[in-house]
Amino acid sequence: MLKVNPFNRLFFKLLLGFWLCSSLIIALVSLLPLLQLNQDRSPLPPSQERILQKVAEHIQQQPELLIGNLLQRSNRGRDLNLGPLRIYITDDVGQVINTKRVSRVFRRFQLMAEEANHPISHQFRNELLFGPYQFDVEGKSYNLFGRFPDNHPRPWFFFFTDNKLLTAGFAILLSGLLCGLLAWYLSKPLRSLRLSANALAKGDLANRVDAATASRRDEMGQLAIAFNGMADAIETMVNNQQRLMGDISHELRTPLTRLQLSLALARKKGQQSTELDRIEYEALQQEALISELLTLSRVRLYASEKRLTAELTETLSQVLDDAEFEAEQQGKQLLINIDESISFEHLPKTLSRAIENLLRNAIRYAEKNVSIESTQSKNHITIVVKDDGPGLPEAELEAIFTPFYRPDSSRDRESGGWGLGLAITEAAIYAHNGKLIAKNRLPHGLMVTIDLPTN
Image 1 (cartoon, rainbow, N blue to C red):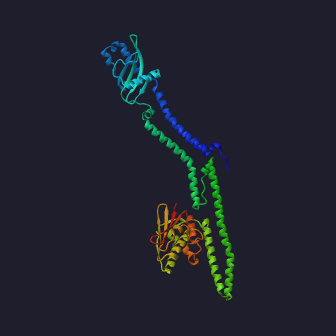
Image 2 (cartoon, helix red, strand yellow):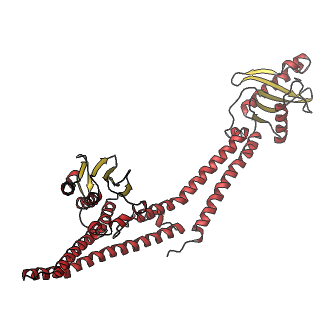
C-alpha cells in the first residue's frame, strides 16, 4: 500500500483549500479601504497644480480681488479641458473667504488634505476637488482649492467602496465560485469511483477507476487503487466461476454420451422397458440442460463470437420464422413490426438467442397474441416483446432473469424449463451493454423491453 504524505491527506487539502479561499476573500475586501486611503492621499497632479498656480498668480498680480465684491466673483472660472471650475480661497485659519455657501463635501475634503499634510486630489461621487495651493498676498497666507462639478475618471475600486451591498454580494459570489471549484476538484475522484462502482454493479467487470484518480497521492488515490484491486479480484472470480461451470458442463457430456450410446445399443438388441424409456428421457433432459449451461457460460464470458454490423431483420430472420411456426402450431398469432432499415453493430448469434428465448417464453404463456416490434432513435435501438398471458407478480419481475429461477406458476419442468432461458437473455443483452426490463401489461400480459446502445 502506498504511504500518504501527511500534507497530502484529504483533511489537510480541505483545511488548506477552504482556509485559503476565505482568507483570499477577506484580504480582497479588507484591501479596498487601504486602496481608497492610499488614493485619497495621492499627490496633486501637475495639471491641477498648474490651474491653482495660475489663479494664485492672477490674484497676486491684482490684490484688489481679495477686497469687497470682487472677492465674491473670484470663485468661478473655466478650464477648456475639464469644464466649469469653482475656486475656494481660505485664510490662514481655514475659513473660506470668497463664498458663504460651503458644502459638506468641501469641508470633508479640507480634513482629508490636512490629514495628508500635502496637496491632494480626490474624486467624490459628483465632483472633483483638489488642493490646497498656498500663496501669499501682502504678507498674508491664503490657500486655494479647486472644484470641478462633473464626474471624472476614478479608480475602479471606488465603485466597490461606494456600493457596499454590491461589494458584499460580489464577495459572496466569488467565495461560492472558489469553494465550488475546490469542491469540484475534491469530488471529481468520488464521481469516478461512483461511475466505476455502478458499472461494476451492472456487470461491466472490466471497468476500472481512471488512472488520474488512482495516481493521486491522498486517500482518494488509495481508495481508487483498492477499488481497482477489488474489481480485479471480482472479475477473476466471476470469470473462473463461469469457466468452471462451462468446464463442468463440458465434462458432463462425456458420461452422458456413453449413457446415450448404451441406450442405443440396448435398443438395437431389442430391449424395451419402461425403465429404459425413463432413462432415455432423463438423458435427453440432461443434455438440454448441459447445452443451456454451456450457452450461458459462453455468453457471460463474451467469448462466443465477434461483433458484426448487420440488419436486425437479417439477424432475427430464422428466429422469427421459427417463432411464427411455433405460434401457429399452438393456435396463436405472432405480430412482427421490425423496421428493415435498422442496422447496427452487434453479436448476431448472441442477440438471436436472447430474442428467441423471449419469443418462446411469450408464446408459451400467451393466450392468443404475441408481438415483437423495434424502434430506432439517435443512439438507441428498442426491441419490445409483448404477450397477453397472465403476467407475473411484481416481486418476480426482476427475479425471472436469475439463473435457475422459476416462478411459482412454472415449477413444472415441462412448462418452466430450468430457469436458464431468460438468464441467457439477460447475459446476452449485457454483452451488448444494453438494458432489459420486464413489466406487466394492463389488463394482463407481460412486456419485456430491450434497450441497446448503438455507439
